[in-house]
Image (cartoon, rainbow, N blue to C red; front, side, top):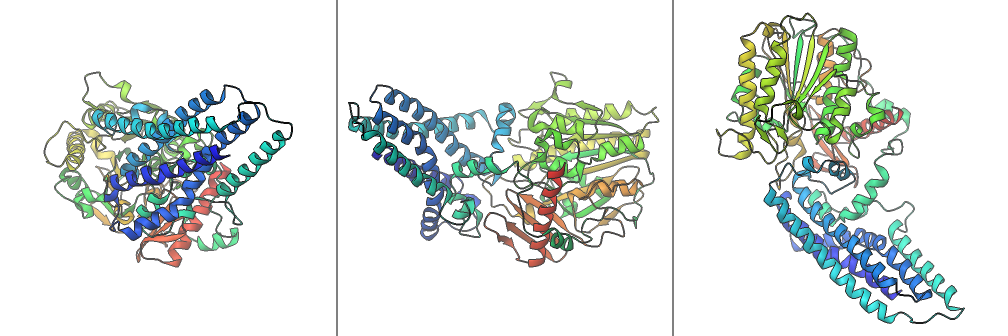
Length: 609
């Protein structure tokens, strides 16, 4: 039992003296508040619970092994434990390094979603340089070596204390009783002694998420997320169905009459551009830096600009479903990974194809197998997919795939090839150049991040100017929207800023320039477009026609890792579901209720698909 206890103690100590300092030092810029001695003390005292839980998980196998070894004194124990230590050390080293590294990009602890990225190593590493990968691989190996060295010392010491001969008959029940007693202790630590089992909220103590994330053991967060991410029905049970319905009264109308007509045509050809990470900070017409996207600003000033659009989520896999399906992003899962369910989601391309005879094509310069994109694009109603493999070998590329310049050239070819066709069409284009590592064949701005957005802006401007000179322009509706906002690594993330994204309608099909300041969500794009086209959108339960008379409760809804933001004309409230507290902006009971009720209805809906 002393051997198992030593394994538990070392596991806890490793996370306290190695993992936590590494995480806090590397990601200290992510905190808007200084990290003082008081905060560090609280991080350790509150985080000890999750460290102890992970230590208990790691001790289960050594406990069983040492009990069997005490009863069967044979030579298998030491090689078995060495093999176990190799596997566990590599896993813990990878978890510690990965959690520390990814936090700069995700602003959340590592969870079960990381396994989706592991299915495509190329896509998972495309955001960083080779040198960056090598340096963190070395960190992984060093961390693993530290853990393994101490565990091997525990093995050698523990083995010398174990009996060398077979026990007396009474020793076997004693050993089993001791093991059961120790196992009961480990179980009590893992579950907790309260009425409800432990969850990550046991370590949360501060409104500053960085402090909470520093306290939370990455292993515990990963283990916990594995057990909760697929169970939609049991999550976010805040209210009775009747109370939930009352809170959401008139929030998601599926019918209504548009009060403004923005288009010249009821059946325009549609070019939907989903711009990677295009936060409003890069858009001059949305109050951002006008030097970055002058071409897009010109396009917007000649079209319709929605200045108060809120991104539905924080990652591309969720953002695609927000835009095309009008379905809010999920804070604990991603519906795009559920092949059976995504076929039952509403989708703008499918509605246009089935109800109005549109030819639908999705174009992306990257690998569509990453994050189930090909599955979703097809399920959403696209008749044909064009991806990285469909471009020439000599096309300009980055780690993510073909750059936006060649992609927009292909878009122009696809459009002009349809000049003599009477069938309406929709092209969905997903960009990729404005993504880490921001390596683009363009050099107008000195800042590499801003320059990457300037590159996509240049490519889009070139495409639009070419289209303006063709017959296709007169009946063309261009929709430009971000998949999500921009998350600058190691910069304090304010959801109010991050969730603000551009939404533009342009092209010859637009009647006249206009600026619409109505607060809305990214998910409202589908119903608003269908409303302008006179097409039914009643099967989009979360998408609203923001130009209709039925849109009376103006709100924006954004989710992030186990949290949400609700925006109204009066302000924003950012809520963390784990600690059940407001963490940014202004606490507001009504907005908090709206967010909770929306999540409850969303997860009820997803459960039925």
